[in-house]
Image 1: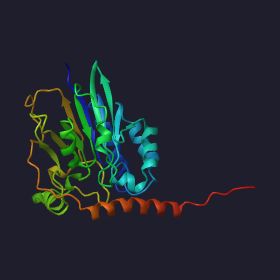
Image 2: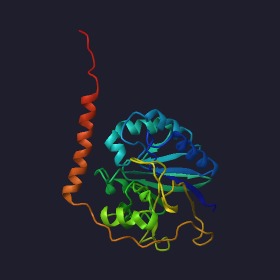
Image 3: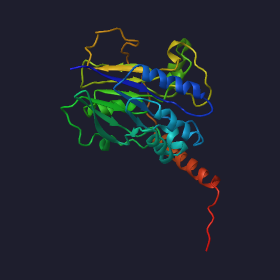
Image 4: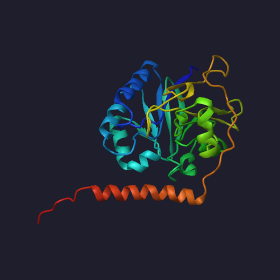
Length: 281
């Protein structure tokens, strides 16, 4: 059957750090590629809810169906509000669940994990009811979740979070994100697509930035990635070859607890800043 074309975007970070012209350029390139579906793997906002209407407009501009999972910045900024903005734009948000997408008489099973960095990922819930006879694509903001998804029968996972390091000169990205940050997967394709029991993961470089919009080095540039699912491996030249993972390091229980606490602390601060509602008797 004909291959399905999937466009992968990640880390839009709609906000004041990344110009809106960059967001709309990404939308235009995506539409020009004429994908069957578009998947976006988290961090839709930067550090606030001030640009949620802009986010809805960006998503609304994408011609193909959009499926999304949330990232850590979305939870820091307010996950319920980000979800609503995505829904207003026409995206389907996969919060630890799966669905089936149909195009041209073919079906693709999509598994979406909520953000693992802030502790909201639930793999068992996400894979519940999967049909083992259907081809399956996994979405996770944090790439290291791919290891568990492979074991659950999800052979290819798309992710983000790292921005490829943004500065890839002299492999500074691998030093900062791998050895210091503890990531096994920094940017590009890892694992194997020839053995479904082992699986592969692709980490996108992202569109936006959360701190400084500086991108140096070829692999640190903003990125829209296209996947032709169903094409024989090796039938065309690919931009990135498969790579071996870095050693990586799992976050300690104390670090995981600090991350969860940060989400709650930011939510409390937002509540304190909200003006009190008036009532009349």
